[in-house]
Structure formats: structure tokens, C-alpha cells
Image 1: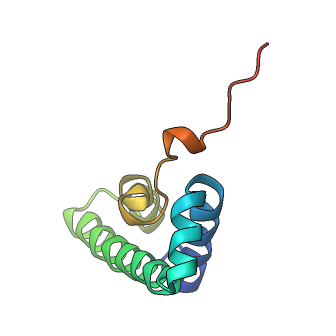
Image 2: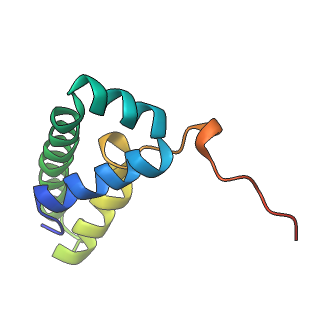
Length: 94
């Protein structure tokens, strides 16, 4: 496995702080933040483990290739959410 649940939780926390500031503040205030981050990390960990296993069983994938492919496919499902439009950094002129 490429990452631990703890590492995934840290990634989710940074993602929410940087790209989902309002969601982060609301969940922290309501006391739901840690449960949300744990759920995102654990769901991602289990999905990665399952998908990596399937890729390895199919054959044609090394362990590293299976890990990398699973990460690319699944990381944005629960863990690294795309930025909210209003949270994105403004484009800078060239």
C-alpha cells in the first residue's frame, strides 16, 4: 500500500483547508470534521487496497503500477476533492 490511513487523513485535511475553506470551517465548528476526515481516509484506503488487488489479479501490472494506477483513479473520489470554483486561486496575468 502506497499510503497509510493516517497519511491519507492528513492529505484530506490539507485539501479541505486549502480548497474547501467554508466546508472546513463549518465542519470544524459543528464537530464533524474529524469524522469526515477519518471516513474519507478509511474509504480511500479500502478502495485503493481493493483496486490494487484487482489490478494485480488481472495480470500485467507490477505492484508499483497497480498502486500508481489505483491512486490516479481513486484519489479524487473521497480524498482529494477538486477545488470549489469560488475557492480557486485567481489566474495571474502573464
